[in-house]
Picture 1 (spheres, helix red, strand yellow):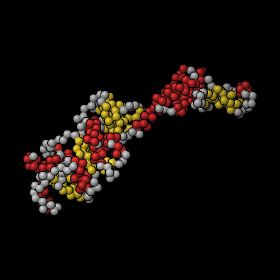
Picture 2: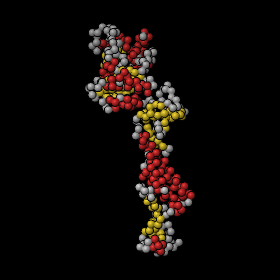
Picture 3: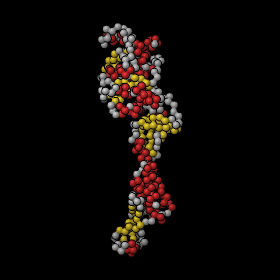
Picture 4: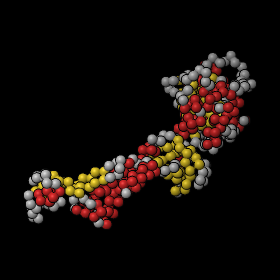
Length: 411
């Protein structure tokens, strides 16, 4: 019987990751509960369990009295001297006697209550183990399987628990079906009476960061550092990277051979475009890189006001602003600067070339401006969207519709 008990405890320990000591404690509490239900009290009941052999004993501590009087003495707490000496002649009045209790004599209700105590303890410990396991994964990425739809929310199975992908954390336009395997970012893990409640996201910028850490060994090892991320989930992400090793190209490391590394992340994000740029402590150079793939004539950054004036060739204006202002908006988020973009023609009309000392350059001198080496300003992965017309959008730091209405229509 004891061997079977130990085997059962070891099996539960392995399957539910609950320590054998905790299970033995649950058995001890269940026996105390059974005694309380059987006798009405269990304050003087003790349980000894040998964790090596599985042997256990249950006994009541009773005080030896001269004679038992039903009106004065409690048979559950006291024992007569005559009965005590039958157990051991050495006992005297006032001694404490350990009287064995036979658990087989417990009634059906007491036994059922003891069983419930053990099951409740196992459930509580299982919830604690699950909570600790998934709490340690908070702010990390896990692979899950889409199981079912809960209204507009989606249930994602993460192995031992089901997480909730709320509508606000879903990528707009992304279609998920049951059995789809996706990577999700663990937003929060809460401990509840029904077990851990896990909230996940597909839109969080750190999802992209964690994916790069998984895919790029240099990022995981800290050789390449992701300094900033700006993301519009489902559409485009810009990341700025730097290297702590002069011999390692941070952009090239993230891109991989023939784009293998970054393309696997693009595929995981279902075609979301990713721009990888070099980080620069000089805000002007950083803004120039952030506006990639557009090329820039001049950047004037005010570090105190966090504002920047950018001049681009006429033919690069729509590319710098991007579809619906997205490229400029993401560049502003990435750098933390309010960016005002002007075309070369507009800048000349406003006299900016004279102010910046660029007046010695002939108008249109940048028409032949060629793209630099693809790693120089940044790489974009995913299909490029042509700019489809202006819209009012001040999010990147300027309303460009009125200023550039004619330029857009010509393009």
